Image 1 (cartoon, rainbow, N blue to C red):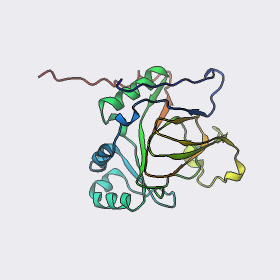
Image 2: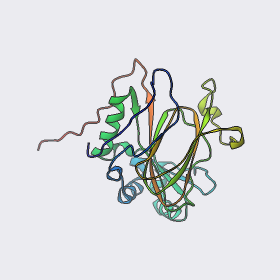
Image 3: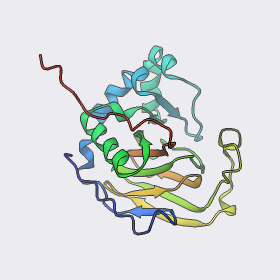
Image 4: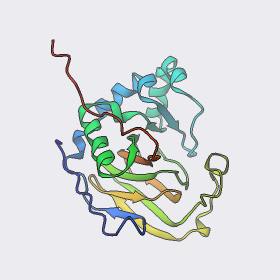
Length: 229
């Protein structure tokens, strides 16, 4: 790879998984994404899956087909303080495929790359929430304040029906409270509550990892082939 992944997990994954601050864990991370790449994705929303987050931390109800028709609105909203998520960035380039290949060969997972970005500290992210897969966060540009909490949602609940949007921080205790600089990151176990609070213009990568079912086909072929014309 053109960049090095220094992923040293200091505990045995067979017996536990807990939140972990990752200091400078991806070298040359800026080679994975730039604002020019983000501009390309914004001009092709049906290919890369875009979501907008308004200043009240709410996801706007647009899908890729609608944003393809409303690209001017997408750019205006982004410039006016909305945050943005690019959900299908994993297939963007050879380098993103290499990063996915690292996770899918190191662990027994299928992985993806989501981009979170905004042009100022006003471009907020989601409220305190949890996600079903294990998530690796990598800061690419700017600073972002992260909190990861000790508490998790129970797996006895239906995640899609019970996913909370109004968890009160007073009911939680903090496991990680860090400002991430470029190259830093965090590991967030499944269903673990967390929140990101951008401090300035920023680009962050989220790498969700879903455990494969034992009957599932082998991992995706992330190789890049040539037509040999």
